[in-house]
Length: 93
Image (cartoon, rainbow, N blue to C red):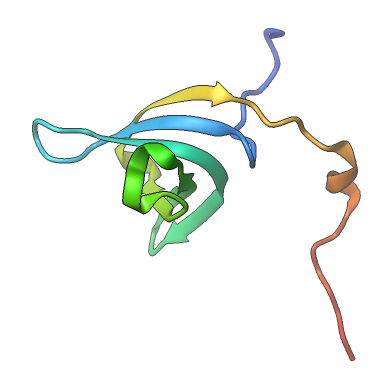
């Protein structure tokens, strides 16, 4: 990695996130990063939970950014350059 290269969470990448839970037990979330969201005045990240969460597999977990302790990168999704040029806006009349 170059010194001036910015690190970003990328959609489709897999992460393990440790966040605040109870006093003695932090919460570990493992899954695929789906994007960012806002919850009132707070921002958070959306993670689709993987099979390590058993019954919750496939569920979307929103983790407020201010309670994140660590983010471990498991795998990085390749960035598709063509997607950056596409627009997600659609207009129908």
